[in-house]
Image (cartoon, rainbow, N blue to C red; front, side):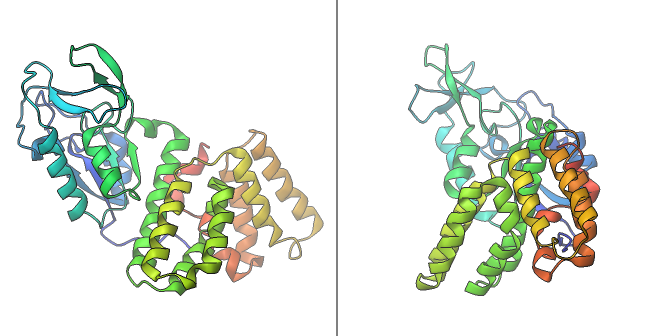
Length: 322
């Protein structure tokens, strides 16, 4: 199996500056994230950014909020000074950020922020009454101009499944950037799909089949077009968190490569571990470690290359809780 490769200086990931402990919030405070600084910073090279500060709002500043009606693009206006409207300024700095930071592999966001909130950010009627919820202005711009970039809120990473999903996407996107985008070839695209096959299956089996069929015909298309289509669909599929059922399906497919190489008692042990996981009796790490043990000794080069077996560093312990 292949360990996830990393640069010595870490994987470049954007982060809301307040989560790094920078005092950039409207009240001069911060929202320092212990998990990001004490765990993820050992693997990620964080690049802090505050769109509100970049837009010239200063610290401290009058708070802002999203204002608009359902179905409209919200505007970003002052909470106290309703004449303050920074919609265009935030759009400009967000678009410029997306253009300058194509090297990023992900972005960790501040919950509830009118600029950086991933979802469920309150939108108000012009009369000040709550209307509905949306994403922050910076997030909407990132999705428009950098749609493949993995995004997650720091607070949502308290959920083990969402945490593992985000970090899986970061490492998969890093693989794409280094091994496909850096030297674009049809062969590189096919090799990427080959080693990501069971990871993709665990997240979205329909996308796994669809992309397999697409690649069978992709050589007839311009390479840039084929890569863009594949990446968009691949990252969207990984954005769908895997379940015990879909993980068990992927595990069974990996086990299929060992059926002839291990004895009957070992096969039964592996089947039992997968079933225990599917039923919720053990965490994913249990069948994964067992399979890794036998894949290392008896697996083909093809199955050893599967990123599904090690999509991120084992030391992060991400599969110990899902």
